Image (cartoon, rainbow, N blue to C red; front, side, top):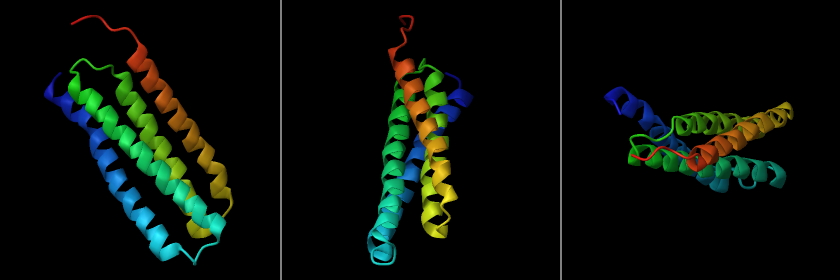
Length: 135
C-alpha cells in the first residue's frame, strides 16, 4: 500500500477516536449538567445520541485496525467507514439538535443517519465475507 493510501486509510481511526472522546464528554455532560434540566424523554434522547456515537466510534476504530492489519484490505472497508461516519454525524447530530432546540423536525432526520449506519455495517460485513485472492 502506498504512503498516500496508508494515510487515507488512517482517517477512520482518527475520526473514531475523536468521536469517542466527544461521546464520553457528551455523556458526562448529559449525566451531570442536563439531569433535572431536561424532561426524562429528552434526556433519554440525548443518551441515545451519545451511546450510538460511542458505539460507532469504536466501530470506526475497529475498521481502522482491520485496514492497518492488512495492506490489501478491501477498499469497501473505507466505504463502510465513510457510511458509518456520515450516519453517526447525522443520527447523533440530529438527536443532539432535537434536544438543544426542541424542534421535533430534527427527529425526522435521525432515520437518514440510521440508514447510513446500517448500510455501513452491511458494506463492512460484505467486505469481510467476500472471498479474496490468496497472498
